[in-house]
Image 1 (cartoon, rainbow, N blue to C red):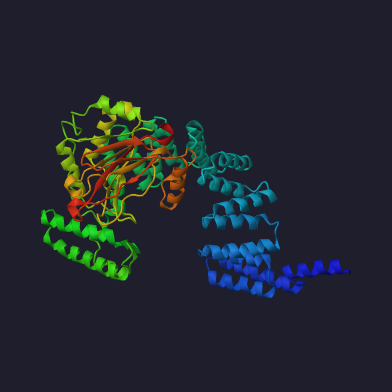
Image 2: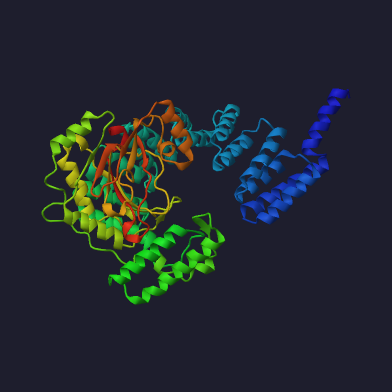
Length: 565
């Protein structure tokens, strides 16, 4: 035996061990896999580690330990172990595939792409690797490559329903609605109980104007997953588009009650001090106005005590970890709608009849990109009803780090008056809204001691942002409104890219490079800013009185879809 041959043999033995060791290692790994599959993770780890101790650097032992680390959420350790396994066996498609799975779950998309591509290079017929690669590419909005990858996977396995559904999602993102619909229908043909495909089919049908078919699709989705918040919400939007506002509000209310009105224990492990402050102030107002009885003072006291405790422990933080035992004093009131004020339709209309529609449309269409504002938007009685609803209704359950609270259509914000305003706007200004329908609506209520909404754009065609807090609350009449940048978000940026606090530096850098100028619209009560949804915007500097009735409240209506703008 020459020196070279001996070195190769020694290398193989380092990987697999001697004959007797190899049998023992194989037995340990098999036992470990059985424990692993049975959920007996400690026993599995013990077997894998014993095998690794017998043959240090054993690729399969490292690989299985990596999968075990992945299962318990230790993604970085899993990546390290599987990478070591690959060092020992670099041509294993399975190892590369599982490295892709772990890096994908860890949020390391580019590393996942490289791992899946390597697995496919080693095994071009690796369907699961193709599917997962397509999913990563889709999530990164690399739609052409994602679609190509999905089609390669389907050429190898045309009966894979989930891949037909995911292909449909990518096609819809490219506005290829007919092809997307065909993909969803094929997924359903292969798997009639495919909830996601039925739901996605409904969304695609809505965008093509087939509202009745969309309603039927969402109903099918609900038959598969009864009380699904996703399907109920979409059914509410479709009903609204079909003119059934009562049915729409009923669906939105089902979603809201399931999320926020269950009187169950508080499940949160973190709380926002701004939410505790708001809820204490609001509950006190409701007691003063006779909307709640005086027994709710105990709830106010509990909220204030908890806020004081968190402020002492975390003086510089708004979002604070909380001991579950400390939450019993605020449950169940914290997890229910204690009161919802009436907010009904107005028989004679909600919009100000004196609005100069022609002049407003001319201002909007004459500005490139499109942005204008409308003063005295609503009739006084509509403004008063909305203001009372927002002040008194205990629907403010969505917390944000900046200290403002949100309520969306599916959170209890859907009311007959709100939907009336949205429809009247669309019909009153056809030159602005064209055929665009309401796709989302929300309100934000700001803590006057904290900052407002950060820079972002929205996934729609037209934004309407209007304010309802009295002007007397605003201590700086030159500001307090909205700053709009006159450059549209790049067409190839997806929602995560232009609506993320983490991407704020990237957005600001792009705006600087694009030479963007700001359009500042000062705050006025009953003023609406109407603009192209692709425009980046943010809340201006806010200096409002720091009391409950003076909280800045803005309402946003989104119309249409980005690609239809």
